Length: 315
Image (spheres, rainbow, N blue to C red):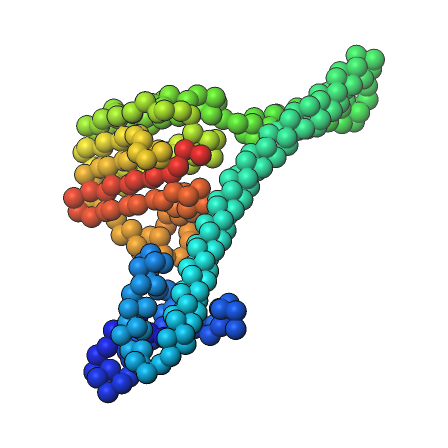
């Protein structure tokens, strides 16, 4: 079976680039060539195209019933082919959505686990250390003049307990969601912009388009971290005079754009080179997170400056 396109050897009875399919007696496809699997276009157009080419080569001496049967079988094969293409497309979409859903679920689960650990440290270990300190105060009150070695031991235990309690409280605070997450994305980015030092050091402008709704937490964290990383890089490396930032929406996506007129950098080399603290782990992480959420990170950089764009669906 072929598409009817002929060239070169086709004039000698050979057909170029054939569609090859193998089926059983009921017209169910058992095997098809690579070209058959990737055949483009609407099914009916595809069927009409191939049937027209086939009919033009049907032997006039072939019985009408045989010819009609072959053409009917051909149509059946092509419709099975179409259904296979649609099934492959739907399966690919399903797999992609599951990957994105798994990535979102993983980010949310990590955040919930961080909060749980923070609460346990604060209410568990923290409370026990506070109780130890209280017991030491009771011992000191009951033994106003203990031996020197006992006094030193009690003093050291008290100091260690105080230090451990401060460390537990510090770790617990870091594990809890940062305060900016309590704000809307627009307010959080405005606050970040104000405290970054960018407006004070550069000719700068921030434009925030009101969002139709608050994005999912994972999206919000990604855009905030991307802005944080980009503004930090501008302040440290860009040697720019002008910085512009914008948050806008397009096609149900939130889009963050940060542009400067600095010296630029080698984007491909930074993203492809060996991982190190000095070679853009922040940008690598943002690119991976954006891809996991169904979005993307785009960077254009050179002597005219650098433009960073993060686009990601709201949910």
